[in-house]
Image (cartoon, rainbow, N blue to C red; front, side, top):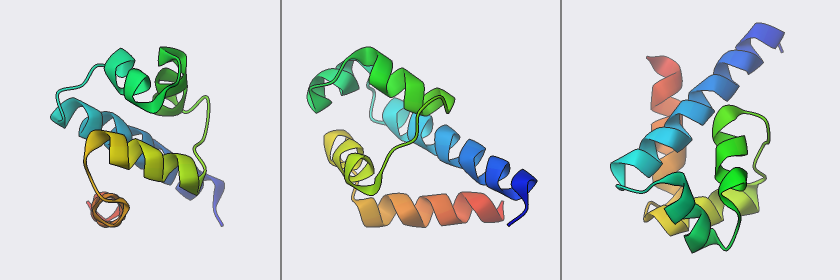
Length: 81
């Protein structure tokens, strides 16, 4: 796969993670508290310094109040725009 395409997809993922947190009205520290993690955990995956595995992504979605399925649908739509 093209390196540029991977970078673009990663950037879309980071933007969506930040967007869903903000739409839920949560600061990074508030989401981190819900996850039982330090604020730097949220900061690092939103900035791309860290990647989430599927289990962590599911936990983030649950903490925000969005299903993993809805998150994936929104991610796929963001790649098309």
